[in-house]
Image 1 (cartoon, each protein chain N blue to C red):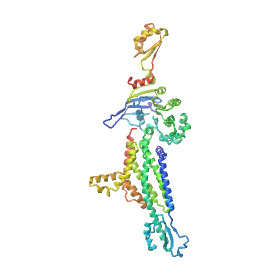
Image 2 (cartoon, one colour):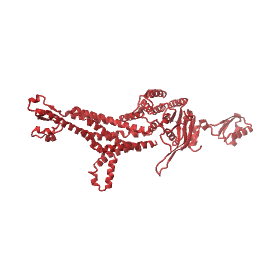
Image 3 (cartoon, one colour):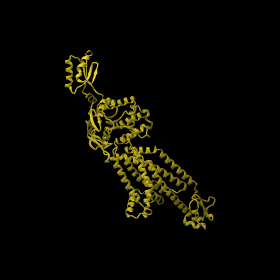
Image 4 (cartoon, chains in turn orange, red):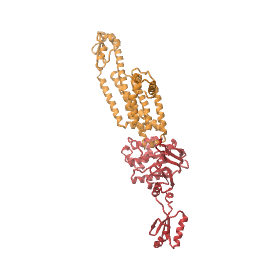
Length: 327
Length: 311
């Protein structure tokens, strides 16, 4: 009951802020634009007045997707791949297919469409993940400092509830609020794509929710520690943005960029150490998330293991510091 | 229930600066104190005297540098000790997006109460504090006095046995102050221990059973209001009005503090010294009408202590 009270209060605090209303507004706008974009795409269809396939020389199929590779021979000299490359994504294509091969052709087209949708959603997930971290941290960075203000903290600490519960209750409330917002947005996006394309990408529903949320939790654990130490949100948010925007990207590509400029092995080892000590945000958002959406699996589990250890260390230090602190 | 409500044994707090250039702050020097159940205990002292530090130590908001304390036998800072206390901090802040009732529900839940109990008890307290009609209003619209009343309701919500009140009438109008004093009187009648921190000396004087005065982190005086204010060693002696001129001449050798139309205030360190004065006056044929100890006000005593005059 006590933990639940802290979580629900944090939830209310976040949703009482105008910034979250702005974020929800942006999400609704994004969904509306996506819906308009998807609605404008032509749907796959078989020529309605063509009669039964067996009675005709060919079936006319109109599709927004590129033709399956194995069926390109059906289409004569006009190479479909060349046409696909030069054609706007929303335009439709019409293929005349022999009736006995039309079913296979349609299946192939549907596979291609599914791959195209997965590719789009994979890219989309990277944007969601990055936005998730920036906006989520912006919204939640103040919820621990707000209880540490004079007049609030005295009252909370006088209640029969442990300091660990207070800190974790606030943190959990923040994570739940962000998770709910993310899940509803991803769910709406998933439904839109499913309805308009007929392709229901389950891995998008899971990958676009869980991996960005995991990344957010990893980053947020560092924010909480910095919140407790500094009793402020300004420094934590600045450091986290600096890491996510610059440091994590450079560390991820250190071998291709930094190491070519650096001769010293000691500095290279130090940079390597930083890469493994700090959250591997870029690996999680730019690699793992789209990969999961497209293939339903991830190759590299190191960012997840590192993130879990990092979160544990950050939260343990935050709890230890919060327990020792005089207010 | 323990026979002593609050036991403090050598409780001390030093805030370490952690820097060579800044000295440590000795906020509370080792303090020994017992507060009885059902007692209204007033704590006085200027700013920086260590009053708030003492309350925060007792509530586990800061940890002691040395010493210990117990509330009804429960070690301070533990969840079990906090279960039996209520606290109204100075300049308390409540979540502005909550209504008055929402604040009570939030803090009630944190105290381990269920929603029906919070509503029942909350309604009674809000009624007592004339806040019923505002309970559905968001606290961001509350005046300072209303916030204070809500704070009191919050502090008493879990029916605590020990209540810490830091400036409970701050920002409250005179009528409201009277109501709050009556409320505190009612709590005393219920046998609750009240630890009262206030700058309003007259208020402390009116409702406290015992008063302690802290100065520079040190306990300099403690006792009932009567004990503290009658220890001035001053006595007012009055004679019959027609003997005033003879009295003025006779009392002159004792260097009176105030000379009145038919009397004077004299200093006497003890009863023997007082009787010497009386014997001298009677030997001069004067008829004494009354001899009364002069009580100084708590305010005068406080000012003497703060300005370094009394210990």
